[in-house]
Length: 573
Image 1 (cartoon, rainbow, N blue to C red):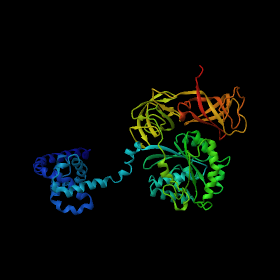
Image 2 (tube, rainbow, N blue to C red; image 1 turned 60 degrees about the vertical axis):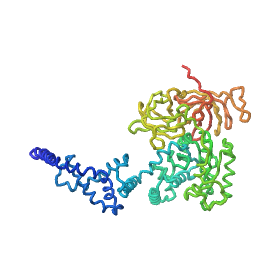
Image 3 (cartoon, rainbow, N blue to C red; image 1 turned 120 degrees about the vertical axis):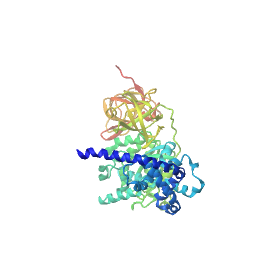
């Protein structure tokens, strides 16, 4: 009890002691203040940074004045320790260093001209302090101005999609050398030294151990004119549903194929993913396709023009069949993901290729036409809890700003946007084509599912269960009759669906519709059918809003059909 009682008394006594000293110091303070004011920051500058020690000598007089002043300030703030005066004056400049330059910034005229040399010292220190910040900051003003483009990397398993993505991030400075060296060491320990680049995108331990991407990896990089988001889709056939989700957000697809002997053939044959991915990308609404012929540095290829042309000849007819125009929509280029050849700089190994390397080619692509004044449509890709409900998605049309009231369809929850991140950079508003993270108020994370749509209250999107659609049967061994069940992938939504009726067949060449109702449809036929989903989903007709009117039907791990929504059918009560 005794020490507790005495402790407060000693503090009070010291306060009283300070109070008696205070008036004497104040008189000294008044005399010194006028001279000390302009000189204080510069004195500190000289003492604080070793580089400027040369200018410290002429200022010893000023530093003495500063010491006196700092003692006065201590007295005013009732510093308790009496012996500590001399120590405190060395500590004080740190505080002054923070506060004084700020005083000088707004009113720069105060300092006399004699000070020129010392004044130069202060800005230099400020610059030195800020050096690490600009790495992050330039992104903020530039990010919204540059056009946003989502690039999805697709192709057969082990074609090198993640490695190319990692290499691009390194070449554009989004991953530093030290991190890559760390990955390289870790990969070597596991005898997987060629995998280290893909680890920049495959962050999951399971993905790294097996060397296979499972979820769609996300990263971004910038060129002089554009801001790109990489969507690294999985190539394995078990994870095609994830790949469809990635492709549905993309503006541009990069089909990666391996030129290595045997690998290209397996990827391109019936069971390979090269064909399926190209077709799914087209269905997801990707208009422009870049085909990267990867692994050109492989000993079996050795940058051979013959092998490059062979891959090209096999692919073009198939891509044409899927719906890409070889002259306008497709661009072939050779590259090596592991060495980075022909990704950013042209390579001497490949003198026969005269076009631009990959990154400059992306930068030279024409701008996309997007209308920011359309209705707000943001299909949700993912959601999680983080100080509220956070959703991820690509804004397909319209613009979103902070504190805006929106409606979550099909549940019709009214929500408010608390904060808005575009590619992890906080902004106040976002336009179409941007990848957003929104923190929402007024809805729980459990009430949201991927495939829900965020709309503005004035213009809600359509939702329902029954719709008529035109379907192209791509691959199915037997016939398809009414009552057939499959899985529907439409924008980011995945739902079970049943074909309830076949309305008519459509002639592929003339587009004419049959007069009679077909009893079944089989492979390579086009038909119009009525479909009914298990639950309510958000969708639009293809004519009104293409991004939300295209779909794929899958069954038993294969893509069976692609289609577009023609008409929404109202529910019967």
